[in-house]
Image (tube, rainbow, N blue to C red; front, top):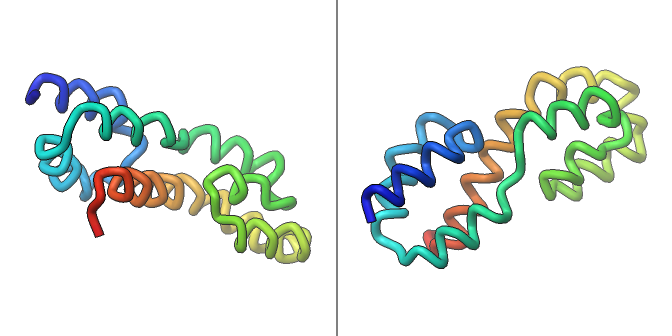
Length: 112
């Protein structure tokens, strides 16, 4: 299982915060392969989120993409917070995507 865990981590390294990788490795080693694969299917790509943020962030599409519906609606209704929120979010969206991916993985691996 260790080789499979390493392979999953290498394939998805850019989708998680760097400080969470030891925890992820530990949780993956303690779970079955099917749960891990199901979790990896639902991960979002931080680069895609950045591209969406640059071009459609003022409409909140980037936040809808990472399943932050409330923030997405806020950005949509305020036109990206009068474009200020949109500009700030361009710098924050990749880290937000990585944190959301970590939450998704922990949810699938049944970790509180």
